[in-house]
Image 1 (tube, rainbow, N blue to C red):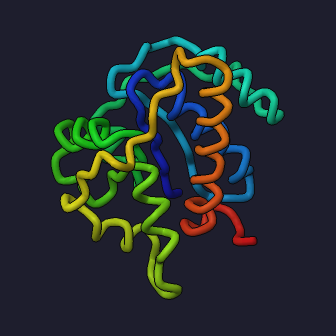
Image 2 (cartoon, rainbow, N blue to C red):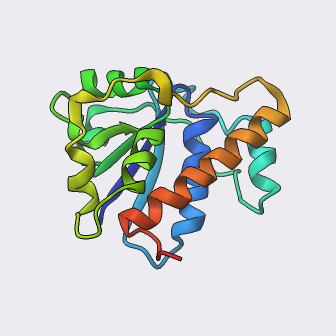
Image 3 (cartoon, one colour):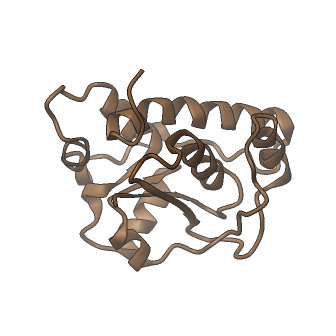
Length: 175
């Protein structure tokens, strides 16, 4: 089963939102497994209230999330690691040297998969980006503590990115 790992800083806002949205979109019919972690996780904490409210307005269940710290083993087991900032990517690469081909920012992965050749295998295609990518232009701002409007915008943007990523990976059918 392929594994998709989302990584942000505390694992209470962006990455768990992506995990929750991806799980809903993927459903039970896919072989993909999805998880989220943080580089400096607030271990044991639930999702931030403003993000939780934004997700619940979309009919998503948030009560089961508990923040976890990323480990080398988690990165090694994942087939694809999507971070929310370049600093998170760099942290993962220090933790798991040699994983550069499968650790990208979520915005970079979405941009690459938008232009994937029809015959390309998605994970292999993404792996060619490797160490060349270090642009902070694709950082995804942290909505934590910035109120309900920032949370709503973040959840909307994460959902939009996943609408491009998940079908390209074959995790959900293409429209």
